Amino acid sequence: MRTRRLLGFLGTLCIIAAAGTAVLAQDLSTNIDLAYVSKYVWRGTVPNPDPAFQPSITISHPSGASFNFWGSMDTTDISGNSGNFTEEDYTLSYGWEAAGHAMSAGYIYYAFPNTTFPSTQEMFYSISAGSKYPTTFAFNYDFDEAKGLYGSVTTSYACNITPGKPAETTMNLSAKLGFATSGYNDFYFATDKSGLVDLVLSASVPFETKKLKITPSLSYSTVVNSDLSDALSASGVDKNNFIAGLTVSSAF
Image (cartoon, rainbow, N blue to C red; front, side, top):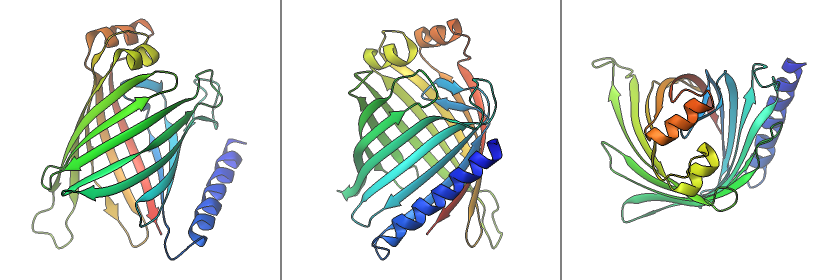
């Protein structure tokens, strides 16, 4: 039954992608990511401490407008939802460049089917700069349930780990530091304190074929603020988490 549901979803994903690309096929592009993670950690919280399947589809227009669907499906029965989606995110965004900086802004709707967690909404804005060490500043404001701001700064570096080889292999390294206002932290951590939230260190090594990109990754996430980490500990959640992942991507 679980396999049938998964195959049905993948089939639907392909149909949506094909239909989206068929409309104004000369303009639209589609990207599909199929990710498997050892646990689901998000902005310091742990929605699922067990492995999850996380598909994503993005349909983009050369103008900079895009639509993304992202979901997280439980693969174990830890919450009684094996084979079911427990989160679905819908994002409308617009990206542009100005003064040598890449910028984007948009709207995200978060839904949590098969759970008691309320749906919520965010507006976001990000700006990126730099070439050797690209750095992105992002600001997400939840105007619905949390009524608070989550911001982050992420810096990354790509290094060649096979010098002298005809086909280079690149390792991508990144570090992200997040902070939030009291309203946001009260909603997600039940702690009415503003300040730093999480630190995430990640490494990934993409391998490309003619049609696919396969990316194994490893990340470490920790909650920085002691009040927030105490709140997690009180609910039986560890503030320190290692996450292994494997993503298969295709663009057309």
